[in-house]
Image 1 (cartoon, rainbow, N blue to C red):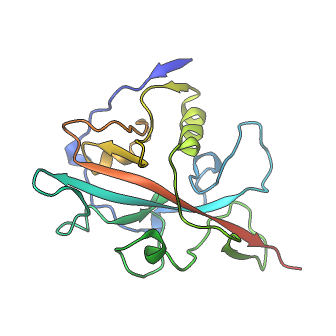
Image 2: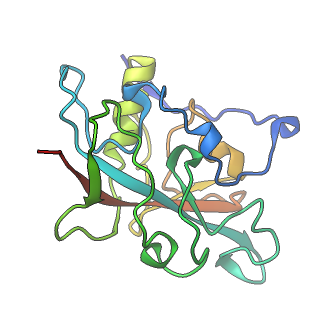
Image 3: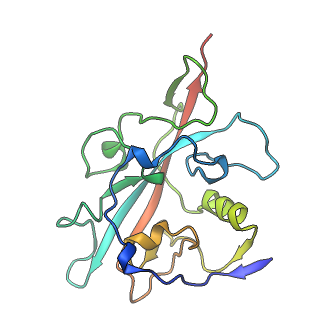
Length: 199
């Protein structure tokens, strides 16, 4: 079934402040919906998965300043936010992805191993996701659909929306085309992690 993306009307009454909140990052999150798994094919039944940490860089638009990081409303438009609103170790909330998340945060593995240790993967660095294939996998599985529509992101990896909450609407696909009414954008950064199993 091929479907074309249809905009979803936003209810302004449901708008809320977005902050890092580990209470929202339940370990019971279904494996198919976890964005911090690198890739998961529909036929896979294995728990030997590749994990990563995902950060979103957020910018807002104003006619005077154009696209920029919000300085007056960081509680509503944080410079950085982790996928699924998972917690980030306390550090500088500005700067680059490496400055924002230099320490390895908690990894939400779906199969615990006693004594396991997580580390940044060897030679891994923060990278911009210019494809968003993992999000397409999640959408395809959730709605049992293949998607036809505009590119998920532009050449610099940004996706656009009219409001911040629209970026978290599960029925909405990333859109890489900037429209006149768009006032917020984000781009996805990821860095791989590896699990050191105990002897």
